[in-house]
Length: 250
Ligand SMILES: [Fe+2]
Ligand SMILES: [Fe+2]
Image (cartoon, rainbow, N blue to C red):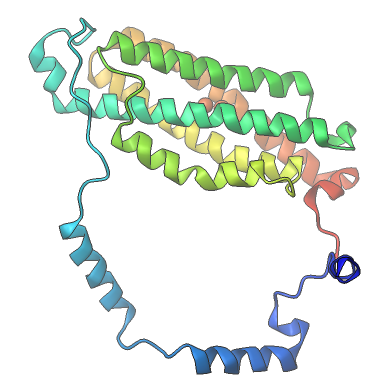
């Protein structure tokens, strides 16, 4: 069995052209065993809408705390812009926490790589990991200052946690390389940058100029992360010594 597995390594048989005879039989089998459903894809859409009308919301916002925060008067605490800001702060907190986990896993990929010469500098990776951790602390402090609870899961925090699950799975997978993990970090950094930009605008819409200023500093660091990660991917993709990182063996 082990020999069979070894002999199969590196052979990709997912395409129909790998064996035309077998693929035709597979197609016949699939058609025989899977009766086609009636109707059109528009019926699926209508069904989704029916479910949407009956579904509960994905979550709810926690009630504003009694602690004296920057939103000290009751009216400001209940305003829709304040609620949206608190929801998005919860999202940022969840995302930065995921960012820390992603960089932690990337550092393991670095230490487990045989050919470190083709990888980005370790001190810079560690620096970005620490920045994500600092951003997490910054957002947590701001939530507290605004009279919120950083341990509460807001609807957007819940959604971002589910949406980023795939990224964490790829980076934590022992089969993926440093480079494959770095490409996932690239996706996360793109989203990170866009979300910090929105958060700054929301802070300003709530007249929280000082908070917006501290977020500007975080955004500047996120821009640096994105620029470097993009550059590293370009360099590694064009470096023939780094080709093993792409796992393209046949
Ligand atoms: Fe981040
Ligand atoms: Fe980042």
